[in-house]
Each structure stands twice: as C-alpha cells, then as structure tokens.
Amino acid sequence: MVDKEPDYVFKIAVVGDYAVGKTSLISRFIQRKFLKEYKPTLGVNLILKELEITDKDENPLLCNLVLWDIAGQERYASVRKLYYKGCSAAMLVYDVTRMDTFNNLETTWLKDYTENTVGDRVFVIIGNKADLEDIRKVSTQDGEDLKDRIGAVQFLETSAKDGTNVDDAFMNLVHILLDKSNEKK
Amino acid sequence: MAKRASKKKVASKKKAEKVKQIVFSALLEALDDIIGPDGKASIIKFAGLANKYSKQLRPSLVNSLPRLDLIKLTDAMSRLLGFGSKALLRETGRKFAIYLHPYGYSLETLIEKMKRWIEGDWDISIIKEEESFKISIKNDPFQAGNYIWAGFFEVAATNSSPDGAKYIAGEVIGNDVDKSTTFEVKRQ
Image (cartoon, rainbow over all chains, first blue to last red; front, side, top):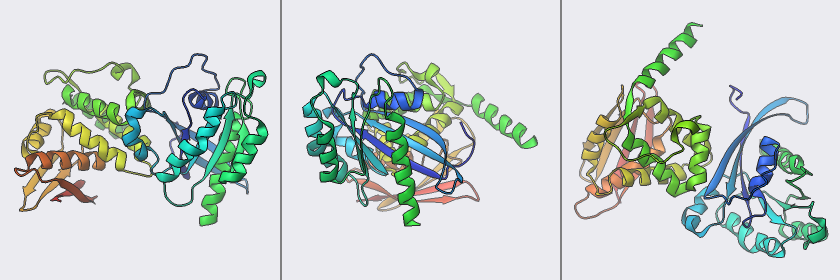
C-alpha cells in the first residue's frame, strides 16, 4: 500500500442484476484473474484500489478507487440507498446473453442510482460476457442506443473471462471523473 | 528513526490492551446487518485481520481480544464505508448499540460498561441535561469512529427515555488540543 494521501478518491458503485459478472469484472481489474465459479454477493463487496496515474500534463497522481460491488437482494433494500451516498459514479452492468438484464438497467438500476444520489450523476454502461458471441441476445447497437438515450458517459462491451476492455472500462471512467473534478476547480 | 520506535511502542501498548469479545461480536454483527456477510468480510480483510475474524464470534464477556484489532477494524470501516457519507457508519453504530444491549441498558449504564469492556487510556463522560445529553470522549478507542458513536448514542439515549422519546446526535465537535470529541444528543 502506498503510504501517501491520495490526490483523488472516487467511490464507484458497480450495479446490475445477479450473475451479470460485476464481481468478476472487479476481480479481473484488481487481481487479474477470472472467477470460474459463481458465488452470489451477499450485501456488498468493498474494494479499495490505489492507482498511480498521470494527468493530461503528465503529472503523477495518486487516485484511490473505492469500488462498491452492490448485490440486488431484497434483504438489503432498506439500507441499499445508503450505499450510493457519496458515489462519484455508477457502473451499470448487464449480460449480453440475457435481455432482461439489459432491460433492467434503466428501469431498476439507473432508477436506484438516480433516486439515491444528488448533483451531477455520472454513469457508464457495461455489456459483459461479450466473449459469448454465439448466445448473444443484446446487440452492440442496443447498448449504444441506450447510452445515448439515458445520457451515459461511456458504453463498452467487456469480457471478464478473457479481459477484453476491462481495464478500459475502469480507467476511462477514472479519467472522465478526473476531467470532471478539474472542470469544477 | 526515533519517531518509528515511538510509533512501535504505542502499537505494542495497544496490542497489550484488551477489549471484551462482546464488543467485537456486536460490531461485526452490526456490519453483517448493514453491508452483508461479504461487506463484513471486505472490512475484516482490509483491516488485515482475515485470519482472525472470519469465523463468527460469540458475544463473550470472558474472552478478550487486542485493542489494536478494534482500532484496525474501525479504521477500515472509516476508510471503506465513510467516504462521501457518514450515514452508513451512523447506521452501523445504531445496530452496534442494539447488539451490545438487546434488552436496552440506559445510556449511563452502557457507557459504564463500555469503559470496563475497552481497556486503555481513553475516557468517556456524560452530562445529563433536561432535554439532552452531552457526551465527551477522550482518546477515542474507535479510529475516526465519531459517527459510529453518534448512532450508538442515539439508540442508547432513546432506550434511556422513560416516555420513549427519540434522541438524535447533533453536531460532533472535535478538539485537537486535548484529543476529545463532544457529542450533543438531543431529544427529538
């Protein structure tokens, strides 16, 4: 762990239906490995990742990402609204092989996020399991259209299994948040 | 070098000081309720205590555990849960009070018990006023745990109320000179 105060701290909520691969995406990003067995998250998984990055002018920055991998069980519904407090952004994740998980992004997860946060809301859309091309139910165009319609700042298709676009999904979001923080200064 | 040696001394002193297991079990149960088993495991792991606290603890008043572990746990809670919002810490504090005294001790009794249950150079005092309590903590045994205490006091004060009135912790005032924190817990 780096023994220095971070220049930035961003809390990011990772949300979506069960088994879309939220925990796997985080595991791929943080630990560089794919979780082969599905184990439902009970409550939340909390991960703090220290990133040493550079800004546009190549100045080094220390950025702490606090990732909140939020499960959707009813048991935690009453306190879940508190999970979103202080979030800098949300990552809305669906599974490209399950249309219901895509439909629920707007009706459930975006609603949950917007109802429980205030101010400038930043969110990205992630279509995970893009390696399962043969059984895909949600097209890339569907994802792009949703991004434009709901005002997401980014849409990417990822594969936690083979690592495609996973780093970009997180790092692009970090840079978007950095830019927004600098705009406010 | 001298600074490092002195830090080590403080850490080893805190390691020698003990906290009754019931305090840990109540705090971990509270976390389980608020952020679920995986959230609780994340906190324990971040605190570097996964080997020690992965199994459920009994609410024992006989067994004791190192005070340093309590500091590590509450520091992890503050860093992972506290960012951007203190609401989860406060809610955890409320549950913590409930698990510590499911039968509802009064605020004064619970504070007396906490003083006995957590060893060390910390102190807590309470002044009862007509519509409120003023509670002051010196050398807080919870690392940056002000909001855990705020929730804790709210529940305990409400339990103390003969007519069932609710109490809310208002402004929390920190004093860096004497390392104290003062809470005003007011009748709603």
